Length: 451
Image (cartoon, rainbow, N blue to C red; front, side, top):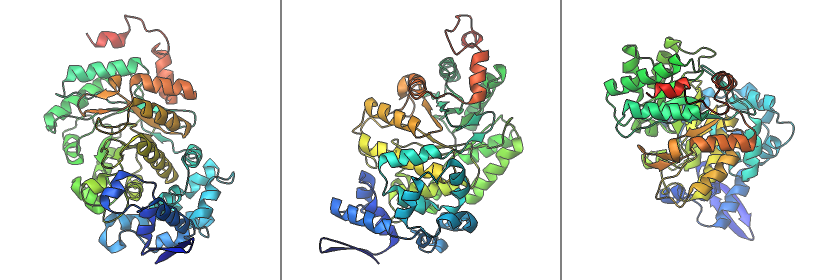
């Protein structure tokens, strides 16, 4: 039992899971789940209570018991006591103050990451302002490598997302070339297929591999199909670069996605066996999102932001190249408006980077959310300031296959220019070699490829 007294009124919270949920800044998903604070006063009381809880308690009281959930078991089994030692005596409030201090340098934070559990990261985020989250996230540098180096300080990469409602190869190819002409695509050229037909998906893989090979582009490709389909394609020797899977923060959520830790391990090993990287071997690509556990009725009473942070324990087990929070994609039932989407994006970036992950962000919203592109513009700048690794690059910011709004090729360039950020160094050099860092000739080979 956790108790906080405020002006002679006592607030009682039966367990740590409840304190975490009640302390969360308001979002519609937690209200839908019935775990949100009933008033602003109760929320503040929970935040005060949370600030006084020792970090060591999070190792002894899990929101979902160790014996009932393989993600909980992974979290505890991952924890490194030696890495935890510098902060072992801290409360959540003291941890916040320490993170914001000059002592918490990028090197120190990198050495600390395996001593922090997702629940610790989620807890401290709940008592931080937006600018606090940005300051700490900016200090966390977690570069990753496959055919280039993503996530270095002063860099912002992008994923060309050339989706097509009929998986038309020509349409996909046109979007890829257009994105490259705008200087996008260094994080990954990643297609969400409209079909789960393996032959159709194999065709997309071959198209992307042809473009990358023909122009010697220092980037990687991915078709975001289910892991089991990717494993089948690997057996058929289809040119797979990155192995993709959506993941969640509870065992039940991952079951709803058709995966578990053992299957993810199989995919990880299969991706490594292809040895297609040139400067590194980080071959996994994961996507997450606040609300996924609740939408699958698999949250087990845990608030959606803590569930999201727990998904990062799953991700870091497999040394990914990319982790992408599709922050506003699930819909207003979970994040109602631009303010909630902004807060969630900053929380996800902070927690992921603090836990040692190469985090990117799909700054996005669905058409029935109370948000617009101006909200996304503001979030993009905050992502740039906070050291986000990569963002999406979609023609016109409108994904015609998934039917949601995200960031465009133009938005990537604008954010880079405003924040004085550059793409991955290998990709930047390629752009210069291809004369794509200035006016483009009508006879450029990339334009000829379209013919």
